[in-house]
Length: 262
Ligand SMILES: [Zn+2]
Image (cartoon, rainbow, N blue to C red):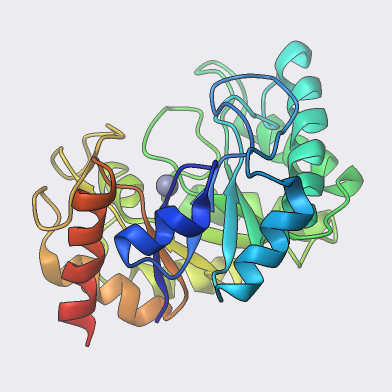
């Protein structure tokens, strides 16, 4: 099983090597901004694509957090669609195996159905030269991908858009915080999405069902070790740690997983 890490975009190859990671997840540009994607690797997209292939290092892109294609607010939804398309295109240019985007949310007083339908409309227009992976999120009343019931409704929209190529990224911290038991979760999600493509393996600084999105290093948070490992074994897909610290701490997390998964 490939276990990787979120790393700095300037040199994902070196960042992965320093952690013992064999998948590298990066941002293409500032994660909190509305700016166009940028490839910080010297030599640009083509050079990064070639270097990653030569290093046998699959790349994953994480889309900026601001993207919320579910939003009922035009001034968020429309730029979100535009930026997501640019990010998907840029991810394809670097040869990424996929791009992770959060499920997004509507306002607390909004109808969830409007949000799911906004996903349908987005996916009907979105060109997908690489795999779009929708990630579950931790909290929020109006969240689109919080808990299996919402994910099932979201996937009805995915199917209605004819977007069966869209995949799923399961974040263990987010699932735990959302109050979704991890035991058997891969099976419950696969039953509604047909797939889990990537795992974000993070421990949680908070209690089960807290709705808080605060990642912890593996074995240092509240998620039972066996629950974390069971998700990885059940999913049997590439996994990425998005844990606190840099190469030392994340390197320890990756080694922690390899020791236990064999
Ligand atoms: Zn994540």
